[in-house]
Image (cartoon, rainbow, N blue to C red; front, side, top):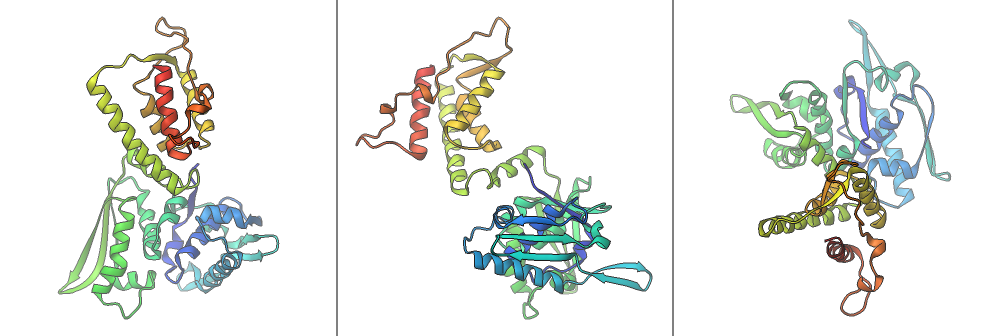
Length: 360
């Protein structure tokens, strides 16, 4: 399930430039949990917050320190609203923020008078928390949320323009940085890391004479298929990053194998009902101890597209057929040449080969 952060776009006028990468992840993970909670106090375990923010360190002291620094920097941000011409009101977003290292949890409450920031939103910014947490650079994270404010409109061609001076303030770029430094250390990571999420992302430097005055970012609306592929790639909560990379490699190998088989001969397919096919997929997940995500389903379908033909139950084409699964495989077959038990990807590859022979 996607975890969507959503807040009033007024918050984008504030500078989070002093926040480090992990502090940004923690803050917006908290915003995600507070969404639609009104002014109720919520309790978040360290473990849940780590999972939401993709926090990998196991050091509790370090994690507690990051939580403290996140709130300290949050207090330094001047949240304000304009009540009427010439009248501004400043406030803190959270009225309580307790870190309990003994119980390994934090308790947070949203400011009652300003709960509209995360509730009853008029003009909103929303983004996928997992995508946000996957970004490595704080500059890229801040630019990500700023562009997302305009990514939700219906225009095919989207754009965001900001004056260079405002850009420096928003991202807290060191005053000593010249344009060549900004290009290398700020704009380059932004463009490289955000191109996955903003199709055709381009940057135009608008100049006044020889001096850069503004930056204009343009991109296009993603197609549904591209969005699904990105979601699959970044589903770190379902399976680990290393395992996901292995599955991606396996997927490519299987595609090549199936393509070559199709070129050699047409394979007679086993007719199977949709219900039985779905049950077969569930067994595949259970036997390999993995969770369902789009990329895993693609691999399963690719493995079986040359073997099974899905037909409606009850039709003449449907014939109840014995489907061999891992349970039917003799364990003695799952060993290497030296007699050791196969594990990991080697075991899965061997299982695939055996099942192909048994079901052919």
